[in-house]
Length: 185
Ligand SMILES: [Mg+2]
Image (cartoon, rainbow, N blue to C red):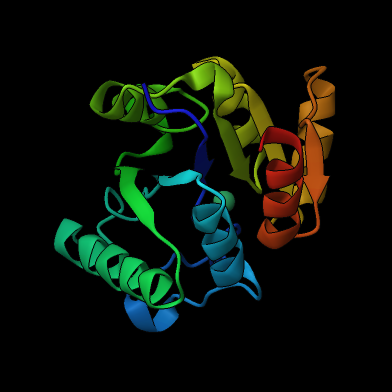
């Protein structure tokens, strides 16, 4: 059973999000301090797994091969900074495809749980969208943290309308990693 797992959203959490989607490595820009956040989580014994919606694939803006290429480069950069991403799970579908893997559906987290026998009650999801927080709740994660590096204002309002809220709102992924390390060590 794998404990101390942190699920990370990608766009708006690790790297700068774009309304035009991230279509190649040139467009992928790490947010300030996100590399050090992942390093800090890794050094403190947390396993980090990326959980990301990538409808750009279904929209034919990027091929699966190109998406995998971005993830290979991302993991290489993270590793050369002392961090480690154990795996990347992505949903390639459109919002109206009715799949079970596009967040807020819990499918991706359940795929990860099956592959690595994760204790979800001890796992935490970090993301910038209300979809990330709802996904964490739907999947049965022990915690959900929102970062303000994406669309957090809108996301918090949408959550409040559903009577939901994150366990912690962090300035960025580094702030989130501090909170996780201090409360889940
Ligand atoms: Mg995001």
